[in-house]
Amino acid sequence: MDILVHAVTKYPLVTAFVVVGVFMYVASIVAKLFNGRVHSSAIAIVFGLILAFIGGKYTGGKHGIADVSLFSGIGLMGGSVFRDFAIVATAFGVKLEELKKAGIPGVVALCVSMILSVVIGAATAYAFGYTSPVDMATIGGGAATFIVGPVTGTALGASSDVIALSVAAGVVKSISVMILTPFLAKIAGLDNPASAAVYGGLMGTTSGTAAGLGATDPRLVPYGALTATFYTGFGCLVVPSIGYMALVALFG
Amino acid sequence: MVIYGLALMGGCMIVGTGLGYLIGHLVGIDANVGGVGIAMLLLVIIARHLMDRDQLSKLAQSGIQFWSAMYIPIVVAMCARQNVVAAYNAGALAFIAGLGAVFAGFLLIRPISALGEKSDPLPPLGEEEAALAAAPASKGGK
Image (spheres, each protein chain N blue to C red):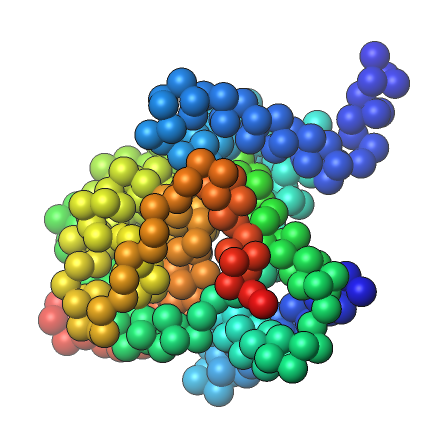
């Protein structure tokens, strides 16, 4: 038994390759059962999320299945180093002309979405009794991404339970983007590079758009990822400053 | 050599990250503003430049294409390490704030896309293509 455990834990990353490979294979079989109406990558992503849920329940940790030592390689493989490296790789072969077309709508989406997220987050916070501008800005930041929330909260001195709420709102956003995108893509007109760039700017969560577009049409990934990667930095810049000041002006 | 492709991509990423942090520093925050996006732009421009001059060998390209094709498996691993339990237990406030932002986003895709030049829908994916599609370069490159 010990030898067996050693064999699977000696090279965590290699174990992760095997586990994910098996997942992808099973997902492709399940996709056939659906007559190909659902992408096998979408199914694999849902498998991943289910596994993360089980892992989180089992260990009580924050990193899903990666907190189980047997699967620690998943944490490395799905971490930001590999993710960002692979996202950059998807840009290879992208047409510059398409990127140029996507430029202005992408920037507009970025700005509109930042305002909208803060407004929705702050309004929800207000409705639940968090009426101070600091709390509203923090939860509004969380509705942008789960990084903007805590960055805003820390900068403004929000209490730790409000910061935790903002992270939770961001996590809900990113996971619902992963799950909903393949289903809503058609209705939302998400079928060309320009709309993918707009989508990336509107959703903002890098992990959410990465998985959502991957499950919808992998060829759209670079366009969506390009705008989404600007979102968190932009949010960390404007939410604690302009966003907070606007909320102070309105509710202070 | 395969490593040339990886080195090119890695170089773009290091420069992009550096510029991202520089932008962050200039506006007074300790964050990487768009580093990955800048890296992607650099890769698109430099790879095009090199390929127009036939200076990016097939092997070097395959080094990049490998990582592009690894994209979906990496995303699956990324999903498996998300804090799904936290989202599940988030409570009404976090759910309304998070989901509200997502639905508002989906509603705005069409109107904001309409601002730009029209971009044609991609041709539908065939079954074979869907499996390989994570490597768009195999069609786009020379």
